[in-house]
Length: 420
Image 1: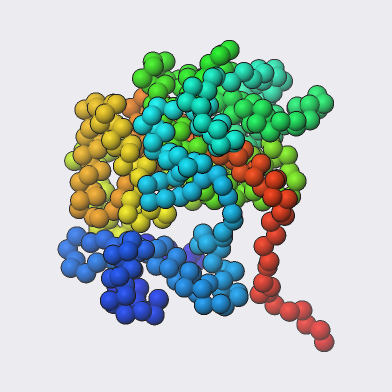
Image 2 (image 1 turned 120 degrees about the vertical axis):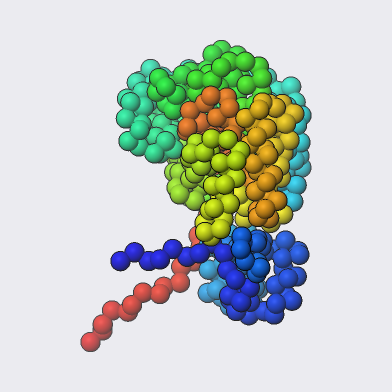
């Protein structure tokens, strides 16, 4: 018999009992943004987000010096690794000292953002990349997989493509020489693989001198206008890196073990394909697709909230006071794409935030934008992988430079064998 799902919210009594604190301390945690609370229709008492409560509990236990408990804190995102690449701040991720949201507002090309992550050098006029075309044998394999892609998770198909590219290059005697050249090749190839989610479901290579954003838009089957390409470029810049997400931690583990660049990136793509990462885009798309119009969206969202179910695309665990990228995208829509449907979407988000106290994440407005561009259902996930690969390359190099093998200790909790 399947276990009953745990509720997403706790009452004040449950929260104070779990943390062993007084009610006044709980209110202090809420005021400091450590625990998010929300009201429920028809109820006077407030509810508290379980994941925030459990995170506070893990930190408190880890600080108390209990060795096994401190180790378990890693399960709630408490693993700490030194990094000079991206800092998570209340204003959003900061790449080598530059806010991602500022780079979006400055219309920074993705090539410049990747260079910043890799070398720390900032050149807002970074040129388009020159990469070798994908081998014909590789394209044939990718297209074969594409024909069956509906039966396979999209990101796992991308991981397979990355591994196949690496094996093909090694088979031709092309050992990894410059990680950044290899990174450019992988990103350009993944942009072409995004054609698998288009109506044609085929690999679409970059054109000579074409920027990643333009090639990605074309591969996804979007209308090739400057405005549309600029929107894709903004999404790429926003998503290029974000601290130690599951994919980023995976590339560091693989890199510390000596894996190839292609092996590291394939591991990251697979780690990002699961229910706790990719599903946020998928759930956001399904939620928006089920309702037509602002009123229906608000009604569906508030009904889910009243039933204690999460609203797709709201509440990011690293931003108790709201995901700055979500707020930035709402402003971006109003300024750069103020169509009636998208303005109605912004009004829906504002109404939900006002009624529930929840804050929008970046995934939901991103999906709204890709839908407005006429891109297919898997477009947001595809753009995410292309963008985040830039950050993964930076983390692979940083991990290699550290010469540290990541080896967390295990605490055996299984039964002992009978020695009699």
